[in-house]
Length: 474
Image 1 (cartoon, rainbow, N blue to C red):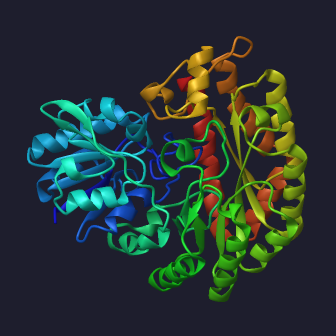
Image 2: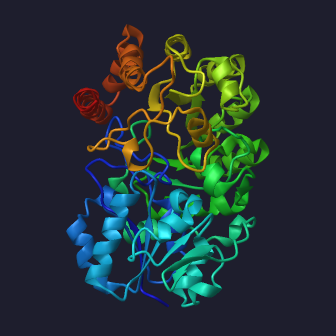
Image 3: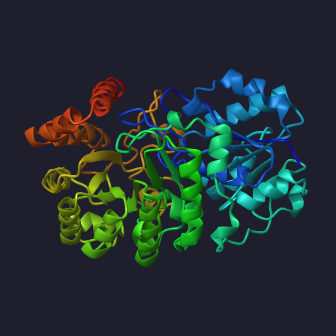
């Protein structure tokens, strides 16, 4: 068995690469997701080590100094961070020429040949689900015999047979023992989740076909493949014992509520365990299901509203109607379920008028907190194809972020410039949060808890710095 390092590579300060490498930019407030996509194969490889450099403040030099301790290094990369991650690989290879290095993630799954040929330091790249791919390589199986990779023979890229998609998700071991072994859970925090929190996946894939969403179009697919309810409940029960300090569990499935009977079954088990939990949801969950989830410990739903304009939702194949989203949000408010709403500016069909419509929509439905992102046309998505074909693409690759890691507008339209789209993010945040009603809500939240008071004040400082830094760097 090769001595194996799973590495989320070091990057700029505040970089959050842990969320399945889906959001490769600095956030409004310093946040870190668990590197679950690396923890999963790490759980399959005995005596491996997982290092999440950004979250644990492990420097470039610190990582390179470890190169001699391993035979195999697996780096999680992304489109914006790829060139930076290649430099890390090259430094590792220079320090230990015998080290085999592989890249995983959506970027290399979509561009395997270009990725493996990008540097002599990269020995292979793995596509799609790479859990058992990495396990076989760690066990010493020759690269030529491993399904699901592109590697090099005599300097030429060779792509092996595709790996069959995994349907029996219960084959995968629990990731929480890897968290216990290699991570400090207090390093991971998200503004809308209680701290410390713990997140994991209970399934992969999403049946929705949103044109901008990276993961289903590149890695997970559009079939929601799930772990059994009993399997999930068992891991949470173990995690509750292992991490008694955890205040909230988060299920990071693209849309946990897509399978409502299963969601209700899991909720019942979580209710018996007496844990607080949250998850991703689409804004179409009926009141009856919401009530079952709430009654069994659900605290918060992370909801992708994306836009308040119906035509834009049609354009991106969201499969959602505004009036349904409004009713869902009203139901959550009635039940006391907190919502963190996410919105995207600059999607196809965007205009000054639709931006205004979305801001008004957000203030009217009033989720507790929001995240506003810029449309990011990642390679491998339908949105990227559209942007290229229509001449909307302004930036791609590592140009999708500023030097300091702030996301920039990668698209522009004849009637709407990239500068206008970029500036609209700050406008959106200010109009949502600087309202008397929202200020009162957050003030009341702070007054109820000294811990929340300290946290919100820190986040407020970070948020204002975020807005100011964006303006300086724009």
